[in-house]
Length: 64
Image (cartoon, rainbow, N blue to C red; front, side, top):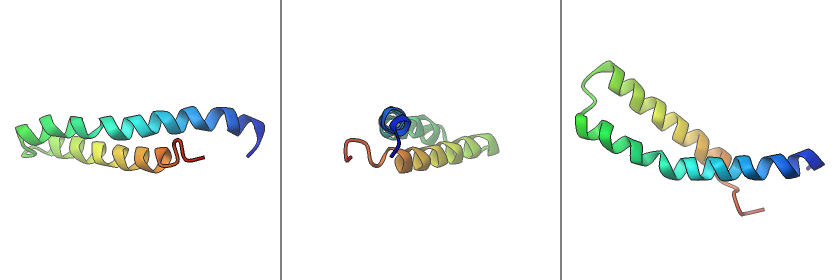
């Protein structure tokens, strides 16, 4: 890893790690209201995709 990567990647991984932990709490209001409309279903799927990306990026937080 180059010098820039050593300083840039750890904060990005840490942020992604904590976002991956926090995002599931946003599912609860959507699921409580119900996913009957197309807008709410789209919002839920978007949150799910963002959570998956955050999990992938933040997976190595504090492991290197």
